[in-house]
Image (cartoon, rainbow, N blue to C red; front, side):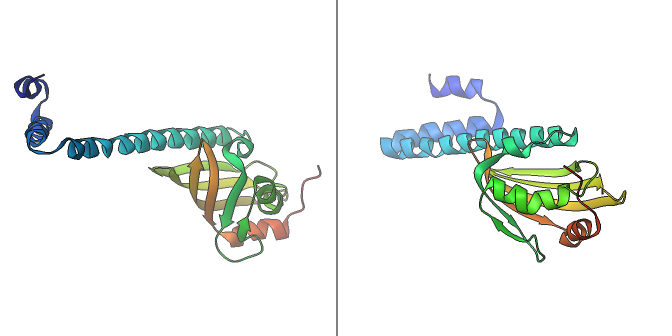
Length: 184
């Protein structure tokens, strides 16, 4: 394919970039061109990973919004989950079971309805997903529970391997302190 054929095929700014690349290829050693091309491949891989991870998280939150428990399939068994802030539940949990037993269950066992998430924003950057959402439920005493969340999720092979959670821990603790757990 000649430079003229490429120019007729590619419109606008891309044409200029291709002409520049073609002219540089005449002046640069082969390794420089190979290196320039190689740097474009990881960007494409990163974009594909971003899209896949975002789709996984969006689908999980949609299932959660409809009332389906999603954490067993979204979290890696050895997930490291950190809840930032101060209070009894703040800290780092070193696996899925530890997180569910010590952080999730104390709250969810005191809710008469599942938390319904309302997603406001999802941001993707490579293997990291940031999601901002509100959660609402009804406690076992009939009071409303409302909270705002930001989760930063690091993904690998479609699973969350590391999570950082920001939420109103006072609202969380009020539910735990003022509501009896559901009978199992």
